[in-house]
Length: 281
Image (tube, rainbow, N blue to C red; front, side, top):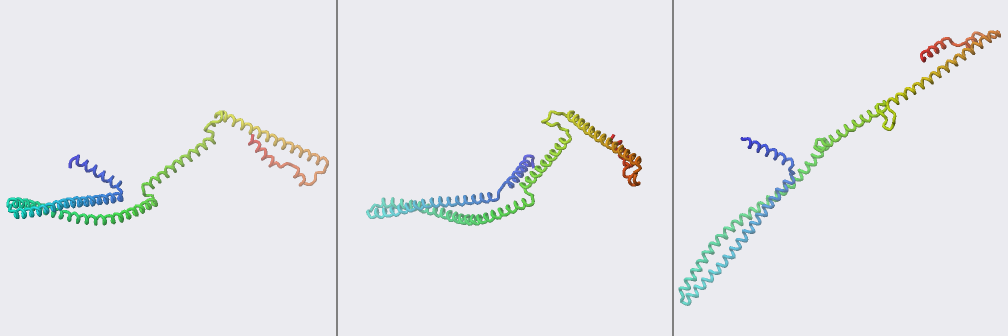
């Protein structure tokens, strides 16, 4: 097989495959049915033309037969008048017409045979067309039922081309949604960290850092004030307790040992407070 022959074979194979996929069986059946109906119509038209031709020959035959009868009467009349020459001429014409009649009868017989054959073929073709029409409708119904069943099955299993496209659309939409959610979370994180400057603010990163430092200094200053206040209150409390103890000892009304323990400061507590103050400083 040559190169061109192989290429032609491949092209025809590909073309047939494409046509088979694109062909609709219902349309193919309807087209075949219409072709058969056209053929039947052609046969009917042929029978009508043939019958018309046969009728013309029959009309021509009747005219010739009428002429034969006429020439026969002319011959008899001529012989009655002792005109043998005229009678001979009339008989010659009669014989000529009889020959034409025989030819027409043969042609008419041939046309009749052809007509009978065509009528028989027409009847056979018409029967086949009716049978084909019944099978066509049955096949179309089966095909439509199978097509509907296949579409439902493909829709349920997701194996069809359309469902595959739907699945891909869902996957793309899911991926885009996930990307958008990740981007939104990233923007929120960057905004919280201050990595992006506020588009509506005139402050830059340096201004924000200085503001944070000032805020931290203010907090530390307030803490120092609280520590100093706490130290002063603790000192005042210790001085007051010492004075009270001295007064009690001077007056001789010291009370019991339990009373003395209640008025004095706890050394352990004071030591822990002092450690906390050192840690804060």
